Length: 154
Image 1: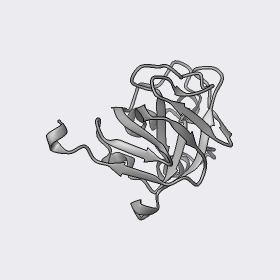
Image 2: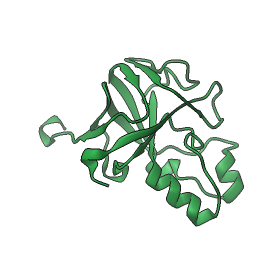
Image 3: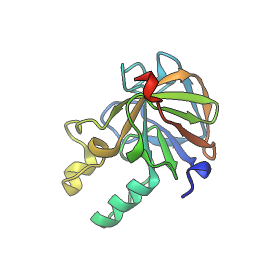
Image 4: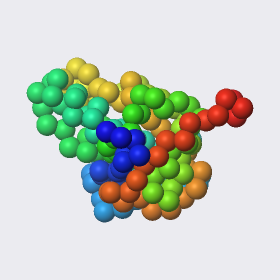
């Protein structure tokens, strides 16, 4: 998909860590906190998590299972953004919200439902974690744009 048309397909929250997130109508993101009302709010370096639907769908097809948005505990499910090209320090604009990428991947938590079911999880490889640089609301359909960190910022 053309990255200029990348968009949000789902926004998701969970009340407890270690559980899949459920889709909600919108997220409120705050600087220094992350997603208001999410179990991971305030987690330094991992305030907001993103996965692209293309990765989720390919994983589901490989393993012969259905996986809804939020199942990997991502806050934002995108479509059309090549998250494999994202690097720490890049900025991602999601609607009015600006996120700075702080981490790529993370180890699965103990009891990861999908890893226990099929023996694999994509979050350690392609999960993107970010801090909120400018807060606001995010809704399904919002545009998503990757702004690569310039080499002078390194």
